[in-house]
Image (cartoon, rainbow, N blue to C red; front, top):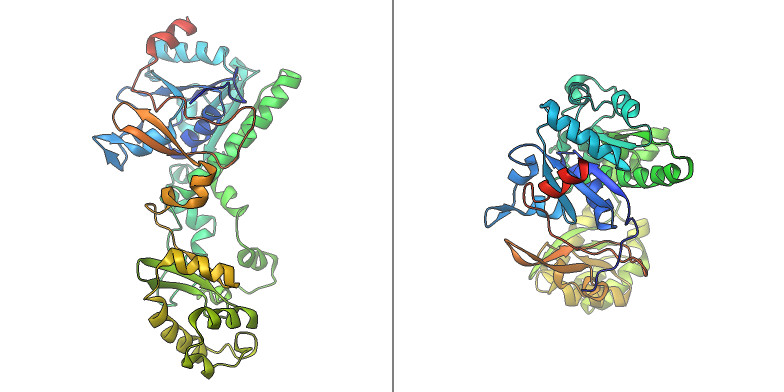
Length: 387
């Protein structure tokens, strides 16, 4: 692949983050062309030891750290802190995700950084933001997902006798916060270019979740809907849910007579559909009717292949989609058409198909230029540059 300079080429970012949120934020900037120098503790970043693994290497770490450089510094030692200070003096931004006590003890608090490097953009992304109680500052993604309200509606159709799930994905709150941290950093870099002044950016993961809440929670916060421990506000009032098919699952959504008519035609108008009014979804969508529909539909959909039937359904006006697994995604024709997965060589994994960017930039395409670095791979180069 021909490599062209990225949109952020010429910018230098120092990353001292050790959690997914901070590492992902810096990854987004690195993939856009910034020089990102990853400062790792002796022994390596904690994410190097987090699965899943392949050949003894963390695939999570590899994903989060494409296009970065690695230098090992023991920030408990004055000499290495001085080296970091020299790196910061030539950098444009610092990405961090440690708690406040750690920042204070390593001379990397907001006040310490601005005093030493007033022209530096300093971004810190933490579970509850600066000033949170000390016992909250080491919260994990499961805490953030629940505190931010997302677990309340996961899944949206929940048996009343079971608690909410933690939310989709292992690090969903980290990835969402990492996106916001990267955007704020880029906005501040524009200001830095204009004014020559840096600034401190305080990103709260839980507030990111609150900014992403769905319409039902939003209406509850506004007082339009009474909160319910049973989460009945998420009852879509129809038969829509996921159904097992011959090779996986599909999700069906129906609310109108047009949906019903199209589905009946798709199924070949079986006799059992005559038990329902044409407008039952709008005026006769009772619990018994929903249960009866699901029982009959389950028998039919169980014999169908998910990709052919969902494609036929969508062409017929039926809101049915495949429930894709991780194995399905690289084979999905839309992702193939968009060249979403970028192939690159990795020294341990061989050829790897990396998830790419969800945006296309004509002059400065996002590219996987280098895989995640080996621990300390850029030690000599970085130390020489900082001397």
